[in-house]
Length: 238
View 1: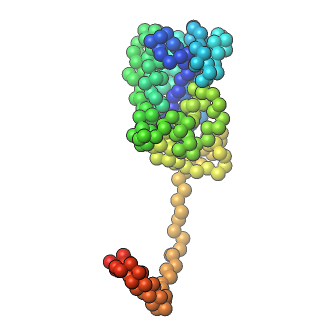
View 2: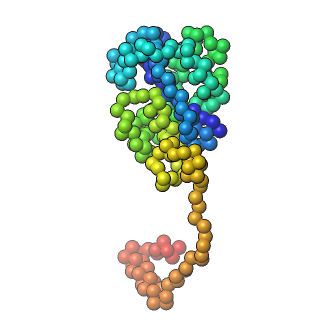
View 3: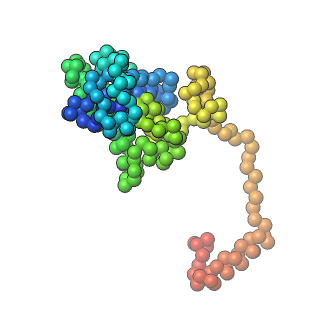
């Protein structure tokens, strides 16, 4: 099962107002394991970045000036995500921008939904935690995922955090590794070993200790005292 956790950063909020994608970050998850495979690309949007958007992600128009335009990177991007399930937080936002970019190119693919299944973790979170805050930061706090290094939004960083959140939301931790706090930093063989499910083996019979006659008599006295105090029969006698 191949999934790709995806996030984007943009020049603003609405593609209908001419806003464009400026960063794409993707993290591959295979069989509930985050792999070493990443897709990360800054993109020249051929327009200025809105001040409000810059305050969120810190990516300036000047920084993007020498980056490739979407046309130059679209094939590599689609090759990475093709036939995968895309895991996105607030998917309509990112999907809307990706489809806007594809329409501008008159891409034969049409829409991203035609080559990928889309799963929205925001919808999942709202069903699992109704009436609660379900932003990515709120979910990190709820699932005890460290995001203290997230001072600004960034597509790849947010995708990596969302991958941890998604795995926690959909079944919790599948493995424990005491070799490193970040399994993605381990060699491939070490990752495979650390993800092996560990089970306790039954090595001996458990010792059973029964109450002595004196202990049973004391217990009965205690039940009688409870009966008298509550003017009713105790639950232990029912």
